[in-house]
Length: 254
Image (cartoon, rainbow, N blue to C red; front, top):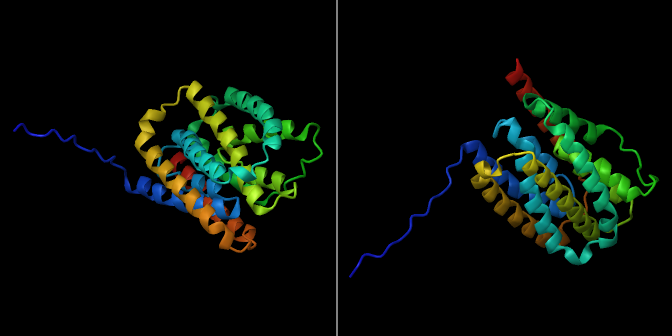
Protein backbone atom coordinates (compact mmCIF):
# COMPACT_ATOMS: atom_id res chain seq x y z
CA UNK A 1 0.00 0.00 0.00
CA UNK A 2 1.54 3.32 -1.06
CA UNK A 3 2.34 5.82 1.63
CA UNK A 4 -0.16 8.61 2.01
CA UNK A 5 1.14 12.05 1.21
CA UNK A 6 0.38 14.41 4.03
CA UNK A 7 1.39 17.99 3.29
CA UNK A 8 3.34 19.77 5.97
CA UNK A 9 1.59 22.69 7.58
CA UNK A 10 3.91 25.61 7.93
CA UNK A 11 3.22 27.89 10.88
CA UNK A 12 4.38 31.45 10.28
CA UNK A 13 7.36 32.36 12.43
CA UNK A 14 6.68 35.63 14.16
CA UNK A 15 8.80 37.53 16.63
CA UNK A 16 7.62 38.06 20.20
CA UNK A 17 6.65 41.71 19.48
CA UNK A 18 4.66 40.57 16.42
CA UNK A 19 2.85 37.91 18.46
CA UNK A 20 2.03 40.61 20.97
CA UNK A 21 0.45 42.65 18.15
CA UNK A 22 -1.76 39.66 17.25
CA UNK A 23 -3.03 39.53 20.84
CA UNK A 24 -3.40 43.32 21.04
CA UNK A 25 -5.39 43.31 17.80
CA UNK A 26 -8.11 41.19 19.42
CA UNK A 27 -8.33 43.45 22.47
CA UNK A 28 -8.39 46.72 20.51
CA UNK A 29 -10.98 45.41 18.04
CA UNK A 30 -13.20 44.24 20.92
CA UNK A 31 -12.90 47.66 22.53
CA UNK A 32 -14.00 49.44 19.36
CA UNK A 33 -16.91 47.06 18.86
CA UNK A 34 -18.11 47.84 22.40
CA UNK A 35 -17.43 51.56 22.71
CA UNK A 36 -17.29 52.62 19.05
CA UNK A 37 -13.87 54.25 19.25
CA UNK A 38 -10.26 53.79 20.24
CA UNK A 39 -9.10 50.43 18.92
CA UNK A 40 -7.38 51.57 15.75
CA UNK A 41 -5.57 54.44 17.46
CA UNK A 42 -4.45 52.20 20.31
CA UNK A 43 -3.22 49.51 17.90
CA UNK A 44 -1.12 51.89 15.81
CA UNK A 45 0.33 53.25 19.04
CA UNK A 46 1.62 49.76 19.86
CA UNK A 47 3.18 49.04 16.47
CA UNK A 48 6.40 51.13 16.57
CA UNK A 49 9.23 48.94 17.80
CA UNK A 50 7.42 45.78 16.70
CA UNK A 51 7.66 46.39 12.93
CA UNK A 52 9.67 48.87 10.83
CA UNK A 53 8.39 52.44 10.53
CA UNK A 54 7.88 52.07 6.77
CA UNK A 55 5.36 49.26 7.32
CA UNK A 56 3.29 50.75 10.15
CA UNK A 57 0.64 52.72 8.24
CA UNK A 58 0.01 50.23 5.37
CA UNK A 59 -0.02 47.13 7.63
CA UNK A 60 -2.24 48.91 10.14
CA UNK A 61 -4.53 49.98 7.31
CA UNK A 62 -5.05 46.44 6.00
CA UNK A 63 -5.61 44.97 9.47
CA UNK A 64 -8.07 47.74 10.33
CA UNK A 65 -9.84 47.12 7.03
CA UNK A 66 -10.53 43.56 8.22
CA UNK A 67 -11.64 44.82 11.61
CA UNK A 68 -14.03 47.45 10.30
CA UNK A 69 -15.48 45.35 7.49
CA UNK A 70 -16.30 42.58 9.97
CA UNK A 71 -17.79 45.02 12.46
CA UNK A 72 -19.85 46.70 9.74
CA UNK A 73 -21.10 43.28 8.60
CA UNK A 74 -22.09 42.20 12.12
CA UNK A 75 -24.03 45.47 12.56
CA UNK A 76 -25.09 45.97 8.95
CA UNK A 77 -28.76 46.56 9.75
CA UNK A 78 -27.79 49.70 11.70
CA UNK A 79 -25.61 51.35 9.00
CA UNK A 80 -26.73 54.71 7.63
CA UNK A 81 -25.97 54.04 3.98
CA UNK A 82 -27.32 57.44 2.92
CA UNK A 83 -24.51 59.13 4.86
CA UNK A 84 -21.87 56.78 3.46
CA UNK A 85 -22.85 57.60 -0.14
CA UNK A 86 -22.17 61.29 0.50
CA UNK A 87 -18.84 60.57 2.25
CA UNK A 88 -17.34 58.26 -0.40
CA UNK A 89 -16.60 60.79 -3.21
CA UNK A 90 -14.76 63.10 -0.81
CA UNK A 91 -12.82 60.17 0.65
CA UNK A 92 -11.59 59.24 -2.83
CA UNK A 93 -10.43 62.81 -3.49
CA UNK A 94 -8.65 62.98 -0.10
CA UNK A 95 -6.81 59.69 -0.65
CA UNK A 96 -5.60 60.72 -4.11
CA UNK A 97 -4.32 64.01 -2.71
CA UNK A 98 -2.57 62.31 0.22
CA UNK A 99 -0.87 59.76 -2.03
CA UNK A 100 0.98 62.62 -3.72
CA UNK A 101 2.77 63.42 -0.45
CA UNK A 102 3.39 59.98 1.11
CA UNK A 103 6.61 59.24 -0.78
CA UNK A 104 8.13 62.59 0.20
CA UNK A 105 7.94 61.77 3.94
CA UNK A 106 11.14 60.60 5.64
CA UNK A 107 10.07 57.22 7.06
CA UNK A 108 12.52 57.50 9.97
CA UNK A 109 10.27 60.20 11.37
CA UNK A 110 7.00 58.28 11.01
CA UNK A 111 6.70 57.21 14.68
CA UNK A 112 7.53 60.76 15.82
CA UNK A 113 4.96 62.26 13.46
CA UNK A 114 2.37 59.65 14.46
CA UNK A 115 2.96 60.38 18.14
CA UNK A 116 2.44 64.11 17.63
CA UNK A 117 -0.62 63.41 15.49
CA UNK A 118 -2.16 61.19 18.18
CA UNK A 119 -1.56 63.82 20.86
CA UNK A 120 -3.21 66.48 18.72
CA UNK A 121 -6.34 64.49 17.84
CA UNK A 122 -6.62 63.26 21.44
CA UNK A 123 -6.31 66.56 23.31
CA UNK A 124 -6.93 69.40 20.85
CA UNK A 125 -10.54 70.58 20.74
CA UNK A 126 -12.08 69.23 17.55
CA UNK A 127 -14.08 71.98 15.84
CA UNK A 128 -17.57 71.23 14.69
CA UNK A 129 -17.50 70.35 11.01
CA UNK A 130 -21.25 70.05 10.71
CA UNK A 131 -21.52 73.44 9.00
CA UNK A 132 -19.08 72.70 6.18
CA UNK A 133 -20.58 73.11 2.72
CA UNK A 134 -21.58 69.64 1.47
CA UNK A 135 -20.31 68.50 4.87
CA UNK A 136 -19.99 64.76 4.20
CA UNK A 137 -18.11 65.31 0.94
CA UNK A 138 -15.85 67.92 2.57
CA UNK A 139 -15.29 65.79 5.64
CA UNK A 140 -14.44 62.81 3.41
CA UNK A 141 -11.54 64.82 1.93
CA UNK A 142 -10.26 65.96 5.35
CA UNK A 143 -10.56 62.56 6.99
CA UNK A 144 -8.90 60.59 4.17
CA UNK A 145 -6.01 63.05 4.02
CA UNK A 146 -5.37 62.60 7.74
CA UNK A 147 -5.93 58.84 7.66
CA UNK A 148 -3.54 58.18 4.77
CA UNK A 149 -0.79 60.47 6.07
CA UNK A 150 -1.26 59.96 9.81
CA UNK A 151 -2.48 56.38 9.92
CA UNK A 152 -5.35 56.73 12.41
CA UNK A 153 -8.03 59.39 12.20
CA UNK A 154 -10.81 57.45 13.91
CA UNK A 155 -11.33 59.94 16.77
CA UNK A 156 -11.98 62.71 14.24
CA UNK A 157 -14.64 60.60 12.52
CA UNK A 158 -16.15 59.57 15.86
CA UNK A 159 -16.43 63.22 16.90
CA UNK A 160 -18.06 64.07 13.57
CA UNK A 161 -20.62 61.25 13.66
CA UNK A 162 -21.38 61.68 17.37
CA UNK A 163 -22.98 65.04 16.55
CA UNK A 164 -25.54 63.28 14.32
CA UNK A 165 -27.47 62.00 17.33
CA UNK A 166 -27.06 58.26 16.60
CA UNK A 167 -27.66 55.62 19.25
CA UNK A 168 -24.67 53.40 20.09
CA UNK A 169 -25.54 50.56 17.67
CA UNK A 170 -25.99 52.96 14.74
CA UNK A 171 -22.86 54.91 15.66
CA UNK A 172 -20.65 51.79 15.90
CA UNK A 173 -21.95 50.27 12.65
CA UNK A 174 -21.89 53.50 10.63
CA UNK A 175 -18.44 54.37 11.99
CA UNK A 176 -17.23 50.92 10.87
CA UNK A 177 -18.67 51.41 7.38
CA UNK A 178 -16.98 54.81 7.01
CA UNK A 179 -13.66 53.47 8.29
CA UNK A 180 -13.89 50.43 5.98
CA UNK A 181 -14.13 52.81 3.05
CA UNK A 182 -11.23 54.90 4.31
CA UNK A 183 -8.94 51.93 4.94
CA UNK A 184 -9.79 50.29 1.60
CA UNK A 185 -8.81 53.48 -0.22
CA UNK A 186 -5.63 53.79 1.86
CA UNK A 187 -4.58 50.18 1.16
CA UNK A 188 -5.27 50.74 -2.55
CA UNK A 189 -3.10 53.87 -2.50
CA UNK A 190 -0.17 52.11 -0.83
CA UNK A 191 -0.51 49.21 -3.27
CA UNK A 192 -0.33 51.64 -6.19
CA UNK A 193 2.72 53.28 -4.59
CA UNK A 194 4.50 49.91 -4.52
CA UNK A 195 4.32 48.78 -0.90
CA UNK A 196 5.02 45.02 -0.65
CA UNK A 197 2.04 43.73 1.36
CA UNK A 198 3.02 40.10 0.63
CA UNK A 199 6.15 40.48 2.76
CA UNK A 200 3.88 41.03 5.75
CA UNK A 201 1.22 38.45 4.86
CA UNK A 202 1.69 36.06 7.86
CA UNK A 203 1.45 38.87 10.41
CA UNK A 204 -1.44 40.59 8.63
CA UNK A 205 -3.33 37.31 8.28
CA UNK A 206 -3.07 36.46 11.98
CA UNK A 207 -3.87 40.02 13.04
CA UNK A 208 -6.86 40.09 10.67
CA UNK A 209 -8.22 36.86 12.16
CA UNK A 210 -7.68 38.37 15.60
CA UNK A 211 -9.55 41.61 14.84
CA UNK A 212 -12.45 39.74 13.21
CA UNK A 213 -12.82 37.60 16.34
CA UNK A 214 -12.61 40.79 18.40
CA UNK A 215 -15.36 42.41 16.33
CA UNK A 216 -17.59 39.37 16.78
CA UNK A 217 -16.93 39.15 20.53
CA UNK A 218 -17.38 42.89 21.08
CA UNK A 219 -20.62 42.93 19.11
CA UNK A 220 -21.95 40.05 21.21
CA UNK A 221 -21.13 41.64 24.57
CA UNK A 222 -22.01 45.26 23.63
CA UNK A 223 -25.69 45.00 24.67
CA UNK A 224 -24.70 44.05 28.23
CA UNK A 225 -21.89 46.61 28.65
CA UNK A 226 -23.07 49.93 30.18
CA UNK A 227 -22.33 53.12 28.23
CA UNK A 228 -19.63 54.38 30.60
CA UNK A 229 -17.61 57.53 30.08
CA UNK A 230 -14.71 55.88 28.28
CA UNK A 231 -13.26 59.09 26.83
CA UNK A 232 -11.07 60.10 29.81
CA UNK A 233 -9.50 56.64 30.21
CA UNK A 234 -8.97 56.42 26.46
CA UNK A 235 -7.23 59.80 26.30
CA UNK A 236 -4.63 58.89 28.89
CA UNK A 237 -3.93 55.48 27.34
CA UNK A 238 -3.36 57.08 23.93
CA UNK A 239 -1.19 59.80 25.49
CA UNK A 240 1.13 57.20 27.04
CA UNK A 241 1.31 55.28 23.74
CA UNK A 242 2.02 58.48 21.79
CA UNK A 243 4.84 59.44 24.16
CA UNK A 244 6.27 55.92 23.82
CA UNK A 245 6.24 56.25 20.02
CA UNK A 246 8.00 59.61 20.16
CA UNK A 247 10.70 58.38 22.58
CA UNK A 248 11.40 55.32 20.40
CA UNK A 249 11.65 57.52 17.34
CA UNK A 250 14.02 60.00 18.99
CA UNK A 251 16.23 57.15 20.24
CA UNK A 252 16.44 55.79 16.68
CA UNK A 253 17.22 59.19 15.18
CA UNK A 254 19.84 60.24 17.72
